[in-house]
Image 1: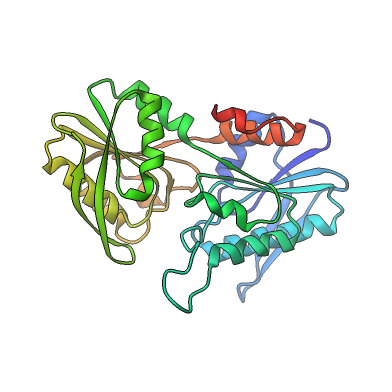
Image 2 (image 1 turned 180 degrees about the vertical axis):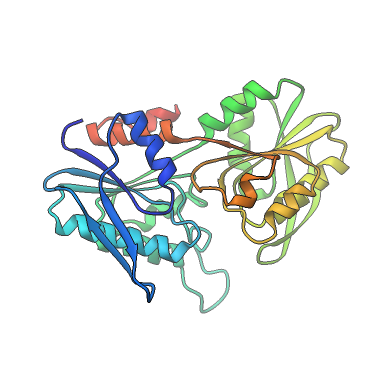
Length: 312
C-alpha cells in the first residue's frame, strides 16, 4: 500500500507488529526515548513527507507517559510534512472522566481529545469507548470500533450450553442486549450501587440465570471490584458457572488477586492493553487479538471505504 506507513510508541508494540503483519507492511522506524529527568524524546528515522501516517498508541498505564508520547509523535509527523495523521488508540485513557459528577472537577476526556486534536491529528480510530458521546469531544472524524465480532465468535464457539449474557450494571445494558440478540440467548442485569470510586456493591440480579452458564459482559475491567461482585451475585442466584468478557483489561491494583480468588471460571479480554506479568500468569485470563479488526479498519480508512460495514 504505497503512501501509507504505520508507527507505534511504547504502549503496545506487540499489537502494532500483529497489525503490520496482517497488512503486510513494515513497522515504521521511530525512536521513543526518555531522558534521565523523565522527558520524552521522539525521533522519526524515515521519510514521511506526504504520506498517510497511522500512529498506534493505547493510553494505558503509565497513562500520562503514553499520552505524552502520542502527542509528541503527532507533532513530529506534522512537522515532517505528513499528508494525514490518523491516531489509532485501541484503549482511550481518561474516558471514564467524561462528565462532571461533582462540582469543581475537570472533564478530562474532553481535555485529552482537545490535546490530540491541537497536536495535529486529522482522524482518530479507537475501540469500545467507555461512553459513545466522547466521539463528540473531538473536532475531527472519529471511528469507534467494537470488539464485539471477536468476542461473539469466541462465545459462540466455546459456550454451547444454555447461556445468559449478564450486564454488570445499568450502563452496560445496551451492549449486553446487542450481544444477547446476536447470540440469540437470554439477558440478565445486575442492580449495582457504587459506594466509592473503584468500589461497587452488587445488589440484585434481574432476569433468569438459574442453572445457566452466565457470561458477564463489560467494556473494561479495572480493579475487578464490579466484576467479582457481579459474579458472586449471579452464582448466588443459581447460575451453574460464571465467565466474563471485556474489551479492555486495565487490571490495576488488586484486580488479579480478586479474579484469582473469585467464582469466575474465566475472563476473556482483548489485546488493546498489554497484560502485566502477573496478569499473563493468571490461568483464568485468556487474551484474544483485535489486530485483524483494527488492521481492516486502517485499510478502509486509508482507501476511503466504509468502516461501519465491519460491524453490520
